[in-house]
Every structure is written in C-alpha cells, then in structure tokens.
Length: 117
Image (cartoon, rainbow, N blue to C red; front, side, top):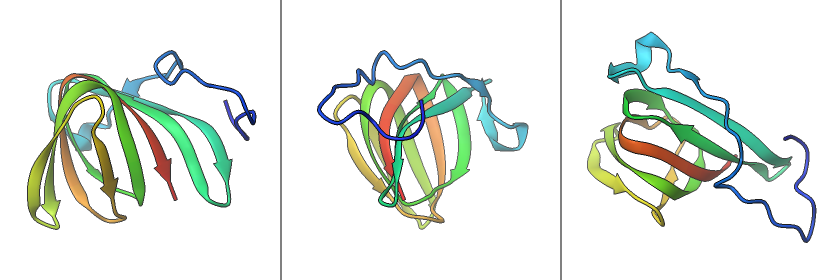
C-alpha cells in the first residue's frame, strides 16, 4: 500500500500483510528476529504504517514516532538517553524521538501502528 488511505474507510491493521526480512546481523542481540513494515499513508504530516517484529532482540536508532501496539509482548530498553525500560502489550501508546538508541526484546510477535515524521 502507498499514497493515501481512502477517506471515510477503515483499514484492519491486524490483517495487513507485512513482509518480514531478517534483521541486519549488526543489529541482532539475540535470536533470529525478522521485521518489516507497510506504509499505509504518507503526507506532509508524516507516514502512518504497520510495523512487525518476530521474537528475538535487536538494537535500533529511532526516528520521531508515536505508535500504538495492537498485538504482542515486548520490552524496549533505552541506552541513549538512559531511561527506564518499558513493557509493550496491546494498547500501549509510546512516543520516541529521533536519535534514541533502543534495544527491542520481543517475546511474542509485536505489531504496532505508527505515525512517523
């Protein structure tokens, strides 16, 4: 999917097919996680999409993003800035800022809807 979501229509984020690829080796901390995303809408305000990661652990450097977890179970640890780790489960709403260094540990495949700018 790309472009704009149809106005006045619903998209089932749980049913969107997300192509998964192995996480790059330099980011893998544990296991053999796979991750991927599908952009659902893009405009001057940013991008809305669905992101998914299978069990395992990986590091990442974040972009400005707000997301809502729709399925799964995970922990995000913050290396820079040093913040307490957060638990993610369905309904969790999180804001990340560009440049944050994180470690994602996924216990049950995690799916989120994100808005990134």
